[in-house]
Amino acid sequence: MFAVIKTGGKQYKVQAGDVIKVEKLDKNVGDKVEFEVLLTSNEGKVVVKPSDVKKVVCSAEVVAQGKDDKIVVYKYKAKKNVRRKQGHRQPYTQVKILEIK
Image 1 (cartoon, rainbow, N blue to C red):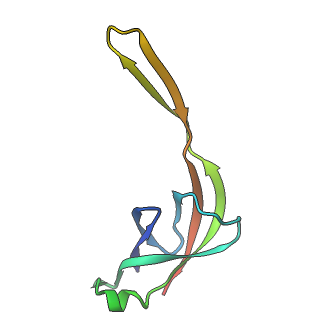
Image 2 (tube, rainbow, N blue to C red):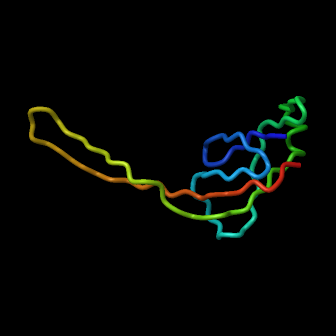
């Protein structure tokens, strides 16, 4: 059984036992989280109908909070001696999918 969940403006295909990184959530390690389910499939039977999908719950547990690797943003303007270097580390929350029911 798998489900497509929505969080942080993105969609993820998950199964029970998966560990995924999502946009930062204001939760502590060990807290339980429930995600909005958009689609679910069980034994080849796909359910997309909103009234049926509302009954499905995807629960997860927060495993860790952290920051991704640094990315470097470098901007310059040709022939103007204008250069700007900037770094960014995106915060994330790592969650473990407990069950989809």
